[in-house]
Length: 466
Image (cartoon, rainbow, N blue to C red):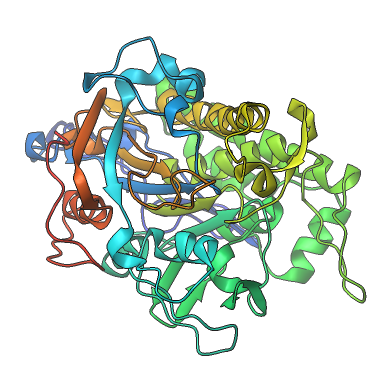
């Protein structure tokens, strides 16, 4: 091999005795000075089946992934909830209309609650409690000091069990930075309002909002000095692995060559978009600090870049666990690009004003439009006998229900993907009142073959998903 060579795998010549055996390891990565580029699934890696039970000595089961997407300030629930239980029809509520074309790929789960985890006995702070308990099922300790405490989140339970299977145990991303200290919500630390992932009860995992830094983390793009040199020379990470690529490409069949070309084109497109973002829009930085490069000029492009990075992370099996906070809980971000100039949080306290509720619905539809983009991307990636969406469980929702009332029962929750055949999407399922949201997370863990008896306030595994 040229350069630093492949890692964790090599190409073998086929013989009559090895026709049914993979000739390329799933963990193969292209290497170069300051870069390591994981590969998507290729036919040379051997047959891949969506059903673990259907795998044979000549095939392997596709890996199951989990993603958690969070949107703040609740929903207009009447515009979110399907009228009837059962199979989803093409007559979607207003907020779900942007994803109507994918109605066979997701289910709406009604009746789930975080109520038991958020007994409101310590006054205000419902936004902080909403995000910090969403994946933990634990009410956070009310403090704006260093003695923060919540609970381990479902994504980190999964990450800790699968850390040796992928290069990154998990990926935490977002689009709105947040403070990790100080008082942001009625005596609750700012960390609670901006962090969804908790490695332990006292160790929150801050999200990365910069697409450029996320990209570099995923592709091991070298030291800071090496990255600065590459940026100055306007070099792509693909330039660093081109020798290994040429060596590998010559040994692949036409179908795999085409897949590899499409994959490289997607990476280069992502690099160019990140580069343009760094040129044309620098965010405001606090006094005495330097603004990071790579933040896109528009919120929509920011979300799409992060969605593309999530897809690449799953496609290359760089990680199987990702959390994505589209905006911090209690966010007062305005949405002038869709005609909403008022802040999101201010509007969520609509007081039953029809004008304000209409604007909230616009914001909610904007978010599900971005979800449609992500679902489309996942569904477009072929993997074995299915798609990346078939091999993913994607939960989307909010820790508040009606933002005006700050209630945390009957949460807006959507579950997309087929989880390698363990989920049956296309349904509206209504659960009994006060069914813990953590019962869903428990069910998802068990579908990752991570057998867990208890998570936060769970009372058992959620049923009727398959």
